[in-house]
Image (cartoon, rainbow, N blue to C red; front, side, top):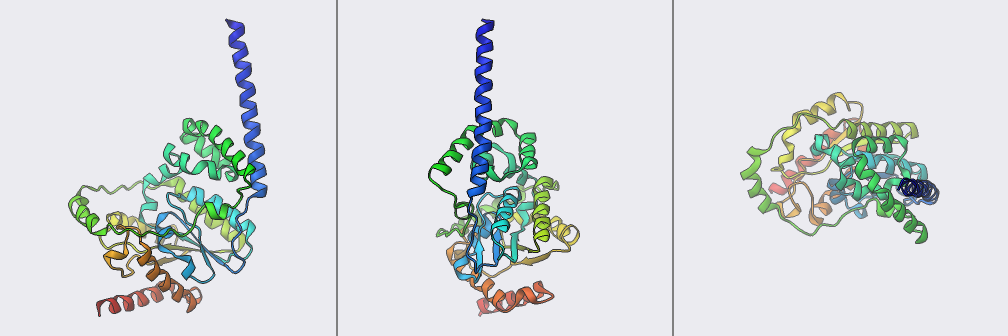
Length: 318
């Protein structure tokens, strides 16, 4: 019996060594072959979660690529931006979505919960460094270890099919045709009093935003924080005081472009926090016009935005 257990242990050790070797080899190979290239004419990229993914139709915005993706924390955004900047010397501006839900404590679950690991990790694994893997291992070792075989199989699949176009599969504008705003407004009116304000901040998520900022500064790339349009009855605005405090204290040296109050009709929202294709078309044209008229060169960018938004509100009222 003892001999049998010893043989099982040796066999398991061999399998473990092969798994680790396979992961290291395939990750290195993919990292060297990966394609995060964007068109040479594009000097601006937009990153973040589903808010910018649905709001910015980059086909309507000159020299700009939307590479945001649903469910993306700053942890995964960092590793994506790192690759994008390495492979695209033409990038001059990185627009980072910074909105209310990104300062909620639950955003840390977007980094290491089993659900989000299974959704994101196998794609980004070849690019996550020791520090990142250590963070994941510290907070959810069980899920991370369970994903290693899936990650190895995914790496092998990427290599076999030469599927190295990571710029395509890690983000892009999402066309939404639905509009459930009316029903959600009714639900919101009933339940808003039940929402609690959470004062704890997602320390690790914001730490990776800091890493994005530092990386861009080292590369000589301008970082701009922005907030996409939100419906006036969006309940996630409950932490606005903490949100503004962070902007004025922690991120006071970074430009922030606030489009929260951009005027849109209910039918131009997919829900209370996402634009559908109608809203994205209107907002993207507005954003493109701002850029075309030199928004990035004026000293007080938010004053220019607010003035244009006021004019847009007036036009809608007429």
